[in-house]
Image 1 (tube, rainbow, N blue to C red):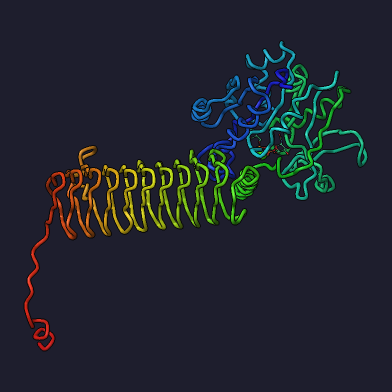
Image 2 (image 1 turned 90 degrees about the vertical axis):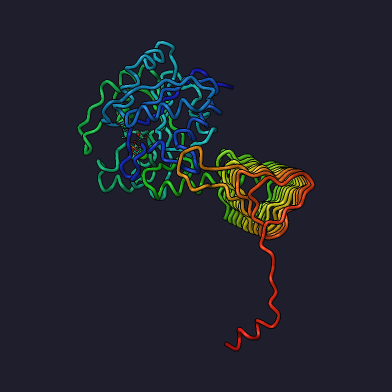
Length: 475
Ligand code: UD1
Ligand code: CA
């Protein structure tokens, strides 16, 4: 059931000093994606089309711009919390906004999510978004943590009795610090209760902040029912407050991504030694060796083989291609059946055709390589357009830079048409064209157009001096 009766509020106004970043905490990437987007991804899955308010403060314009650049099936509003006076104050700002007033008038429940719990799952959101029981003020998500340090503790009547309140770490007594049941700042509230409750919060505590968590005690004092949902998997609700927790979260997310891919037909030689961002798409029947890192909008088609220590960012790889050890590629396309590497470097805007071969120590930049063309060893091609069935020998270099540092004018193009043969150790001083079917003799430095089906030699003639070697050695 898609529940449109629950709206979602995400608290994302804080800077999060302990992250040691100039970015607000909700934008410091985990597996290449902002925590805020991980959360919105899950909300969009759990409650498609739902209403969402994001409370913004630190670098609010930047946060808003980042969110707006994403396409979500959600109706997202932004609410400003100009000064960060605590989670309770953030909620109060949202409830005083048009968004909050509408939520109350539409009698929606409100699921509050902190912006720094990026590991929450779709299922968790669905469970929390279930309608509250009649008369309940709120539903509280709890978890048992082995190390509850830093989390609000759930104080109950007796050991297992009714929930009385949540006490923050900094305000807790030594015996309360021993409690392992924590509140995570994930709640579903009755909107009317939330609006009135947030208004009434006080900040007489260790941090002089308005605590959202105090609403639990408010509900108890008003004799309103509190529901609880105990979450069994603590890894889903781990907060990200510092770089160590960020690294832990990134491992957890990576494990989830790798598991999902493996279940869908990707063969990993070592599950623990790959890094794959959530935005990457991989078809079944792909083999991935250890040390592979796949990032951004990378797409791997079926039947591809990826050898050890390969890094691909925003790369499309066609069916059955082979990427051998140590290859690095960015913002590029690799055609079906192409063989790349070992140790090839595809810099941005490289486009390698079907069944082409780019061998060891070959660097491409802003270059198109046609079908079945082979560049097997030790070459650099920049700003080159190479046709089909071309054979480029070892050690070919396009001299594409003329030394002038004038933006936009300093790089020149090399065009190599279909069926050309380039011998070993040649240079193309761009701009220059090798026309169709031409043959470039080994060791040539080509500065002028080579006509169709012609041969070019551009090297000095050899001189043999008979017996002179012996003489030299005796000197
Ligand atoms: C909060 C809870 C704590 C819980 C923990 C779980 C409170 C008082 N404490 O503590 O019980 O165990 O989360 O993760 O709620 N934010 C704002 N405006 C503010 C302050 C915070 O928008 O004025 C946002 C932050 O950007 C962050 C979220 O609220 O995304 C949580 O704030 P944080 O300071 O991390 O709270 P914790 O100390 O972790
Ligand atoms: Ca936190």
